[in-house]
Image 1 (cartoon, rainbow, N blue to C red):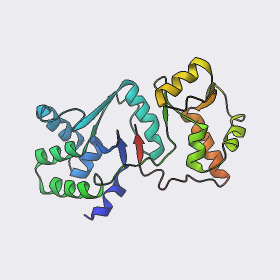
Image 2: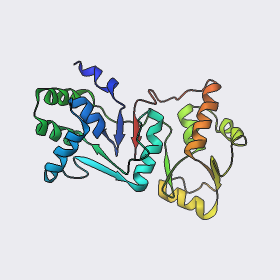
Image 3: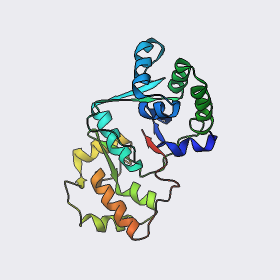
Image 4: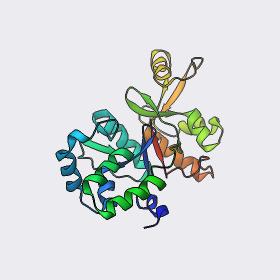
Length: 222
């Protein structure tokens, strides 16, 4: 197995500034099944520490993750109520528990060609507003290297309240404080994921492309 082939077999995902793997991805790479990974974890739970070896997503965290990973083609079942994301240390621990030549060889290659990379944001930056993922015109314009006016003109063509909203006063203060935005901003539009998809299609039809390289290769979730 060539080092360079591993990332092409899986959707590359980062969470909290580090690369991670889902249980399904880990099972596929190690040549085992999901139930075996789950059973090994259950039988050795004391050897795993949350935040170090894995991240467990539930509720709003999971809902936000599902919305954002759609852009890179990572399919999470609507029935999923919790999701484990394994870090480099977690993947290493699983390879030790499995203790097969395949798991050791795969981890060696993952360590070099997958976990060895440095995550960088390669998509439109998402913000948090009332525990929902949103973005603003400035971030879309920056990612596509276009004028904000191009985006503002298009907003009249999509439903306000469904795809985007205009914020002022207390609502805007919450957005600015939660995302460390410029305090001098006196009004702003927030674009919801449905609106962002429409804006992306609109811009790409007009020849604009994401200025950041390989936009669908890596999704960085803060």
